[in-house]
Length: 224
Image 1 (cartoon, helix red, strand yellow):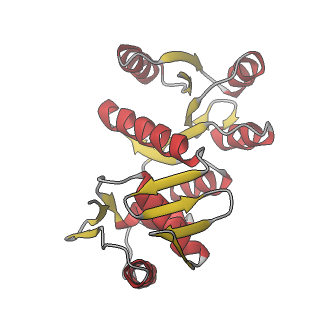
Image 2: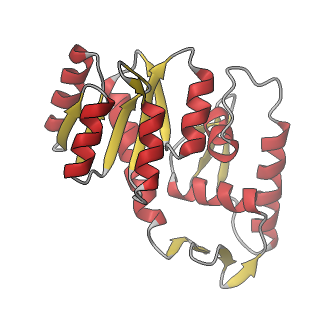
Image 3: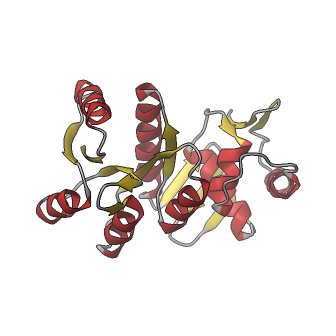
């Protein structure tokens, strides 16, 4: 697994490289967009950790270029805590996750590994969890071999839960994954509750078990 870290804060960069090398990742780095483009032209990377604010431009431009190369790498954005609009744009462009500075390196490692697991599962044509089977090439969902009909957001929600099974996921993270919307404070999550209610209802009606656990004031966990 090879990671390109694009970060101009040299002390932070050194810390990230040292941490991930100890975790047995291969690491390369760039201090700006020009260096990153050169590295990208010479090598293929499995994961990108990108600072949005770089001395010669925005890391968002690199996301566009990565996607134009028709690669399917994993992308995590590093951003200032108050850069809400840039986070939204990055997620809409195809980034998988983001972390606001300052952050703990163990948290960054957890995000990277979570994304890698999720992408590995998504590469499969079939994802199976107990009696639930998802065919990712045809967007079909089966419960005990009987097909259930899900709307797009319900399908995306189920896929997100299953590829993050046993992990507590905050309501905010779910909203950002499904709608690409970043807000520090949601007065209401009614639109999310509606999607979860409908998904749960269809799974049970199809003969499946209810694996969705409500974690009080935090979010949800999809667990046996």
